[in-house]
Image 1 (cartoon, rainbow, N blue to C red):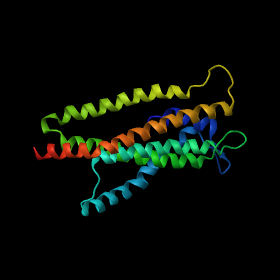
Image 2: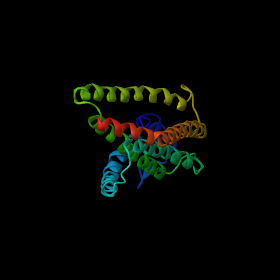
Image 3: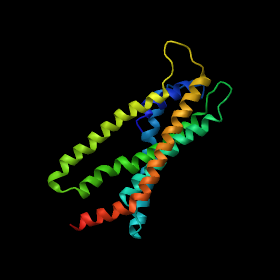
Length: 205
């Protein structure tokens, strides 16, 4: 997720057609897609949760986390698929980025927005502040890991590199990000029933 302001923005700058209505948009302007999709998807997820809850079929937090990881994988897989439809100058349509952000923003809603709620629900009151701090520390560690993973998109400095070369580098890196996300999502879905039982036992206490 933290690749948005890093490698994904550099990819947009180098290998995405940013011309809209005759204007060349700065690569950072694509960041607006994240809050836009959150505003669009948020109400639909809320309605879905309410509908499932009324029928006692709401998904566990663990399952929502895992599905969020699958959505993150789809976000990067969308870009990888887009690289196969690049034009002669090795630029892809901005629409691939629009839909990539749609998947990534949905993933954020399924993971980040639920994390703090999970802590408030499961952690004893006297430990809420400590565990909330741990949640944000884990988030910061994720940012450090994201910086390390961004090295997969590194291109040679102080020399000209072709758009074809950067397209290959980013496609390989984003494929790696996608499959890591898919793997974590699948493992999470497999473990969700066990974690749900543990959670239920914790709530009974």
